[in-house]
Image (cartoon, rainbow over all chains, first blue to last red):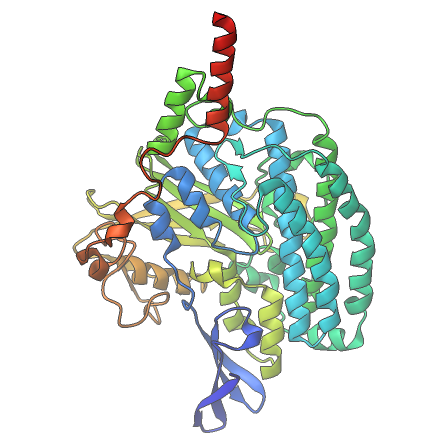
Length: 399
Length: 151
């Protein structure tokens, strides 16, 4: 573990950080060329977690593929399936027929996962810099959030709760009361986090003016999400290309102009508050009951109880389970705002019951790549800060 | 902004491959959501022949194309001319073949040659197991209703 000297040439030394270094949030090897303690060049080696998810998904039915796709970005499973589901719905042409209650549940679930993902980022970023107490406080919130995901979807991490055409089941009785508890508890906890870190002199010393990236460079390297917004560009897919009715929710897009690690930290903290604002709005909408699946027996499986009674239901059930449904030929690019940036799927269908091609636009991969530019001129000790502030998830980088 | 570079293999088509570029016209000075508005998104499809898969690299225009093009080279075997550092990125350097090609077997060439183990072919539910769960309950209920109706 730790840094190994690879070679020494003249005044520079080549060091290898990782791939099992605890600060790399997964398996990432950073090879840096340093002069004294200043980085002159940084190269990265990825692919340690490559699992061929795209290839596997192309050999599964449209509904089955969602299961493996959820495992790409393991901190944002519902975001991944939401993006895939929206893309498939566009190909099917049912986007306008998704019931509003299903849309609200989707928004609720994605915003909850956004909070839980940012909780993990904040906790581990804090640990990287030695602020261990923040980790315990924020993981308490994360547990509460994951409990809510489990209550609705049946699992904490990968519930596979969304479906092409809606969601798998309605939220259980008493769910909204549990949600109220979180909404009530959350601001106090965020206030504690801010008092722990935001004005902490050590935290500020380690993050201010570290890993600065200008707006021009951010666009050149295709940064998205909080990393782009910390550089002063207010691009948020939820506002620019609204999906799931995000244009009907009232929320702000936090923007900072400094472009350093501290700005990215503040943008993410503000984003957590905004996510909770959206959650509170979905809570109001979920008071009115309604359908949760699109009214199309070719896509939505029939209710289990009707199968033994109705012949059509039995046929539809049999067809959906044994060979899935077919999706009209075409291609579509569907983007959503994941906690890390613009997550998108470019889906190609050839009219079959399996997706022909699933190309992911992994926000982590593009964000992480900018480290090559960002690291130059910074200190070797700050590589940890910069990786943490970009929040890469290696399930998604390597897929 | 170059959003993404992806590849698609249409095995039977000519040209065989598509390299898919997604571009976004994002203003650099835009500190509010209104200033960003709805930026224009453009998709460019470049057909690449299967027998000689070569495409000019765009890594000199957009630095983020570096890893994206390496990934397509790795998984599809499309060569990007002028790329500064075209190596495999996801798979080990000594890997044979390009897995995202449609003629590459799902379980890999080596495992494809070996037969699946016998237990993988058997069902784990013994024959004659009575149905259970919601369907069985609904059937039972219907039977009861039917009995009531006939008596």
